[in-house]
Length: 348
Ligand code: TLP
Image 1 (tube, rainbow, N blue to C red):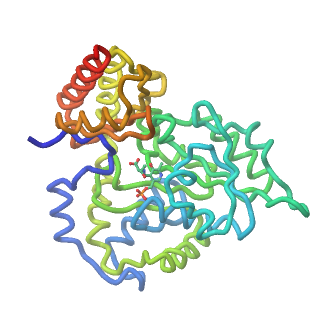
Image 2 (tube, rainbow, N blue to C red):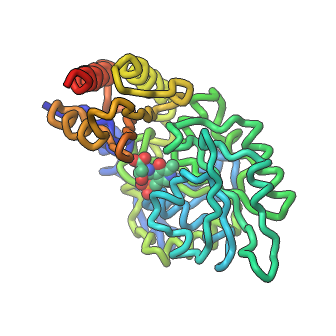
Image 3 (cartoon, rainbow, N blue to C red):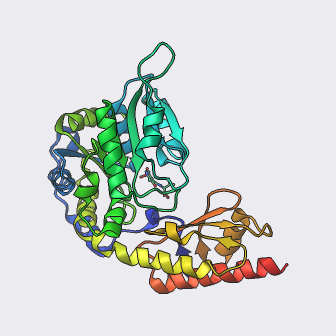
């Protein structure tokens, strides 16, 4: 039987419509700027986000890496929340490619507020690495898919700009945030100099992210993409699926959010599980094992043998992510198995 795969929304497979569009895509050499399908995707992404230009890249990691490089020079600092993806899950690309330090600010909820940012800004001095960039994440993955309050985001952008800093938004799941607010993504991108978003998570394309921003920044970004090995030639094959993801798939994200909610509410009743339902705002459920009878990797292994795949993010922390390859029935069935295994672990 096909496992219920809740490890990530990156596991979604292309729909039949995407596969057809890929087979029929008009292509050209994108390093020459001649792939009509890539050009169409970039134009639409820029329009939808209310920015001047866009760049199609193979991954979110590459989009964030390019953005950090655009906004900094070697020896500067990037302020971000202490559980940010760019800090914890991108192989220290901020240091490796851009030669910058990350100034990580711990937050209880993943949301970086202006007073906390302002306190950490370093001006040029004989001792310090000066701050160049503030990087925010919406939704925040390791804080459980939480969404930035809009006024908090606006205040950080305005404050950073007034201090001469730039703002990058890692919006890998920005369409989930927009579904939560019930607003267009362009409203959540306003104020950020660049936004990276993923086509291959909840939107379901097989590959790809897009970086959006100013025209000059995107022209420079194109060169950094080439340096990183991201000049993809006839990439219209991939952009064709990306266009369907962008135009059609955001409408169904509320169903993923409802399934995550169902999963979270069901497991909240199990012994030895702590889940903060207030953080379950989108398609991610983070939960902690509090009983001590079983570790997160052990529970993940037992779940795997029952056909449910989750990710252990530490000795006690697990994550489940809903997406379009998981139905409501499957989300309910997976939650019931988590409850059953935790109940029997608590009895031993
Ligand atoms: N996140 C992946 C893992 O890397 C943890 C996942 O399964 O959630 N920004 C954010 C907020 C992300 O969650 C991710 C991927 C990325 C950037 C990087 O995207 P890719 O995987 O395309 O490089």
